[in-house]
Length: 134
Image (cartoon, rainbow, N blue to C red; front, side, top):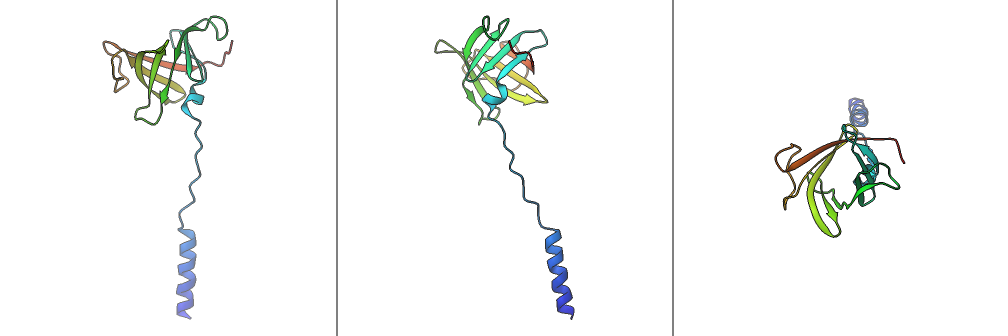
């Protein structure tokens, strides 16, 4: 009788202490997370459309602003990007998503910044999503 009790207890303990099956977290690719209109506190508009960035424009159709190609390297830590105009890299940068904001830091040096501090020659922009689409 004792072995049955031990066996029942062992089976019950195994069932109750089994680790939960982790849920698969599906994250949208960064290019999709960036897509759309963002604004800085100063009001400067940043419109991400796939591998394109339009900065400083008045709207997202006619006057989009300066056009950049923006290839992302999301697998690096921190993730990196380039701002390219007519095939020439103008800036190299890093980015991160924090609490609904997009933080980007970039410079015109051959290597991107290593942190999100604004220093001489390094630009830092904190962008918030803007629901307005024009």
